[in-house]
Amino acid sequence: MNNSPFKPSDPKIPGVSPRHDSVDHAPPPSAEQKPVPARFSMSQMPPRWLILSSTGVVAVCLIAVWWLHGTSAKESNTGSEATAPATTTVDSKPSPIPEPLPVGPGEIATTSELAKDWSARKFNFRDPLTSREVPAMVVRLPGGVYWGFSLVEPYGSCEMEFVTDMEKLRTDYGFRASHPMVGDPCNRAVFDLTRYGSGPAGLVRGEIAHGAAVRPPMAIEIQVRGKQVLAQKIE
Image (cartoon, rainbow, N blue to C red; front, side, top):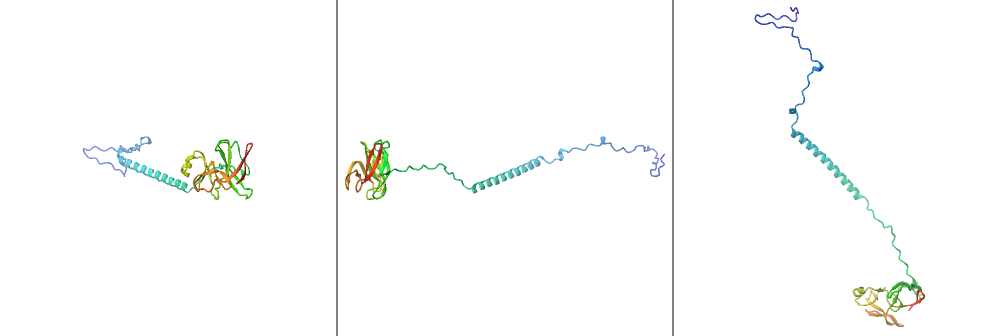
């Protein structure tokens, strides 16, 4: 019998079974009996197309950042290369110093240097009377004859040349020859050292073979003493 004033007894109704108060509330579940939370359902995940789209956007952004970084680095390198001062390579090998020409009067060559026909040697000759130094040449002619002459054209200032190229004689001087000649590039005159021409003091080697010239080249006397070839005096 329930005597609690806060919980009166249920009235007895005919035909209705009385409710048992012995049913107590179930005790709270223990830690081992706590319900496991439900896992994340696949239906609650975002659609696949949305995931793929987001991944694509991220990839595009990464590629754009990489491209911009590479472009800026390339422009920076290009600018630094453009502003870098150009370096020039200096050849440390010195140019060969030309051998000084012998000066006459005196020895101007050796017989071994002029051993072949038409071999020649250039030298300078200083006139003892005027102290004037002029370019000159000695040539070994066929038969072992040595002939010296001034390379300055008579009564002029043009320097003549000893031409051994037959094609050059033909093209530059308009003259066909079978052996070397002396040429004057200023008036295109050609002189033949195997023949004599008229000079102020008589015959002189170097007849005018072609062109308009006044006389043969001015002669320089040559002597051979042992193996020495000496230039003595100029006419």
